Amino acid sequence: MKFPYLFSLSVLTLLIILKSDEANAQQNFTYPAQYGKPFKGVPDRRDVTLYQVNTRSFSASGNFAGVTARLDSIKSLGVNVIYLMPIYPVGKLKGANSPYATQDYDAVGKEFGTLEDLRKLVDGAHKRNLSVMLDIVANHTSWDHHWMNKPDYYLKDSLGQIKYPETWKDVAQLDFKNQELRQSLIRSMKSWVYKANIDGFRCDYADGPPLDFWKQVNDSLKTIKTHKLLMLAEGASSKYFSAGFDYSFGFNYFGNLKAIYNRNKSVKSIDDLNVRDFNGAAEGQAVVRYLTNHDVNGSDGTPLDLFGGQRGSMAAFIVIAYMKGIPMVYNGQEIATPFRLTFPFTGRKIDWSLAAQNQNVTAEYKKVIAFRNKSQAIRRGSLKSFSSDDVCVFTKTGAKEQVLVFSNLRNKTLKYTIPSELRGLKWKDAFSKTVYNLPESIELKPYEYLVLNN
Image: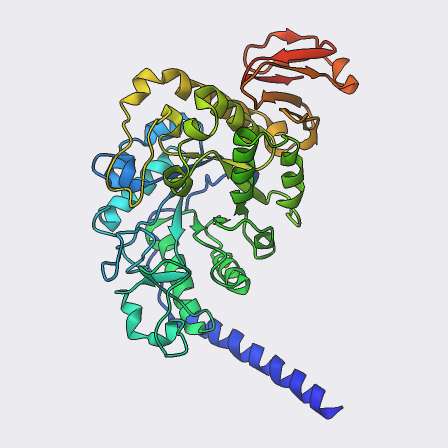
């Protein structure tokens, strides 16, 4: 009986030593002085509408100044959190000019501007009550990162050669068994909170590093008591909720939505995802859902390509924005950009002059988001689905309001039979305020949606 006891004691001692080393490492590191005042307007995680900025494609200049110049336009959409794609210097050795090949976690890439330019962007966002998240690429670095001087930071093959992750030969795989590496990454993340006053992180390829590393990251960031930080894992598993993230990523939802539109999959399949993707989620933890992002925009197509043009993509966005989860808009989506922004995002830029000819699209996005912002039932209410195989139908019920949504996700006119429990209630159109007395059935035109409340 002595040996198990001694083994348990030795493991406990090791854990205490590791914790002590971690605490000492943090104490011995001097963080930058706090720039500006910590932003007090970070929204409740239940109330977020996210806007992704691909800085290289966002403007003709492809830099922070180009984003700062359009902050009023971003704000006018009704979103309240911006997330910037990686802002760091991009590696050149074996490189593909990918913004996800980080050369230095602690520096701003010259192509984007300076630290002062980033601060100006963040300050401008905060003045408009917009929060700003950075994209952190923790799984790997470029081959010319200065950590190459610390080969123990990297994973090696049987011959002792540094490995690359999966098929991404332009980057080197970090070894998360190395505790010093972990602390270096965490210190870099915390430093941006202080030196640029940022409000959280989107963590790229969260499936790469081990889950206990992300738990370590979130636990450490929560020690910054002066800041409220939002944390998004770019991973589909609900396990990220247990690691302390506010949000996981809607890979499953996007793929399922494509199948609904392009392979006639049943709309009821969304109900299954609303259960599976939120398994183990605490109050406010959610999945970020989208019609497009920087990856799928280039690889799969624009929302117009994938989801039935302007009308079809708006029918899909209604479901994303109102049913369950946190909606995300990718830059240019709001003006119906008809072309892809392809990797490495240095070629074609968003043509913001399209806003003039697509004012109706922008106005519709603003209308949809504005009602989400106004309706506590939409953001925080309980969900009940009444969907058919072709029409997404659901209620969201809050303390003082109930919302009823119909969205025809097919390119044909459909008749939907109204459940009896919804017919006896007084409804009005959430946008026009027209009073509705629901009949036994309603007819919905191709990609038509209807939002009612009482």
